Length: 478
Ligand code: B12
Image 1 (spheres, rainbow, N blue to C red):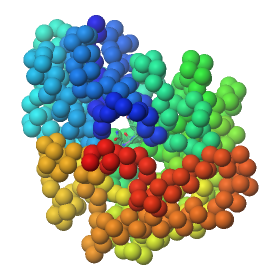
Image 2 (image 1 turned 60 degrees about the vertical axis):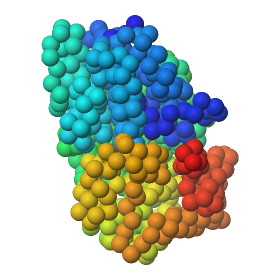
Image 3 (image 1 turned 135 degrees about the horizontal axis):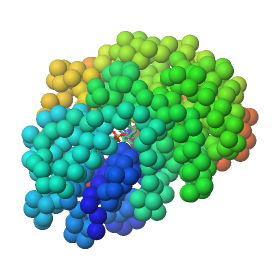
């Protein structure tokens, strides 16, 4: 028996037949942090991650019956919010008022009135959860009345947070979100070195609470990396921070700490191209950084800076890829298609930017209009999305599969097919290029094997307009 069950609401429940952990699957660090903190305070916790653990709704109810928790906390991104309501409703229907059911995570943080609309939940937490969720557990254990809505208190010094306890994941091996080519077959774990992001990119779903940036100390981060290596045999860390490079001196300090302690792990991280500096890249390369993921978003400076408000110039991107090449770091571009005022020429520029700046890898997403983003408000004003789209999605009125149901931003004068064609054309031009293969081969011959995977993704996009996992999820819903 445990006092608390935490559930990572799945975008899809596993179908129970063939099961392959989604290539982009990553451990739910949010509820792992909640669990680690609760355990440190003496509260017993179990984590359910239904998709990789292959749990059906019925299995979740059996877990609740067996464990008899006083609280079930459900964490959800917008893609999983329909299933969050389904899970909560099933628990309420079967068990009545005990356990209490709470909702937190990024969707709840961006949708303040959620609790007023979904009374099946007893409480909602906006923003960071550790301190506040523990206070809620204490309230329940001492029989005090709960509020409906809580604003999560921010942890003052994130060095004091306990490391996440990966044993709670029940032995599931997650691939790691970065999927950096050489790290695939290795043991990979994702980690956070910072919290928060000060920028306001138009597409990004972010509650105001997440604006403030806090860094862990180099010592504290490397302690966790060492623990990952010793305890779980991890050889590669994916830092999933919004931007690891905001403070150059701090990042150089992290590199120094890794080197001083003789850690031989490899790692990858996400960074803004504006933060690429020679002394930083030299240090992080020596300290095991093998891949950097840059949020480039658009190949058109106008779209990137006037519309997305990214504040990254073409020359920053060229500098960043040059430094990557100089120090043997793989440069990966996150690109997006589907922004206000975007034209076919802008889309072509997005397809060209990786070629122009000699990126190693590109990945393109069509822009989903996420609640909590500025783009959501723009799209509502333009009549492109209903303000109550979340409720329509939850009720199944626009379809139940996130990938196919949730609207993409389609610029005026263009169609969804224009976006798909531009994406296909970009993949074809980037990957099916002799120059790309040569560039990859000369930078590291061994990569040619893992590069076949990128070619497979590109081939899927060319044939079907989407990556294999997106196609699978569409097929499942037919
Ligand atoms: C790592 C990551 C992933 C990983 C795994 C995520 C996971 N399982 O946790 C992968 C690569 C799989 C992924 C995929 C996607 N992601 Co993602 N991802 C992230 C990223 C970079 C970090 C998440 C994280 O670990 N944060 C750190 C932890 C500590 O914070 P947290 O999760 O918010 O948890 C804290 C609080 O929210 C709260 N809390 C959380 N849960 C609960 C529950 C309760 C009961 C309580 C009380 C409190 C509470 O307490 C926690 C600790 O303080 C975020 C950006 C970001 N900075 O958050 C985007 C982000 C979550 N992703 C996003 C998106 C859009 C996606 C995709 C849809 C993208 C796509 N093209 O397909 C997919 C959807 C995947 C799916 N399930 O279908 C959006 C979500 C927006 C939204 N409204 O839902 C984000 C916010 C990026 C953005 N800024 O737009 N993602």
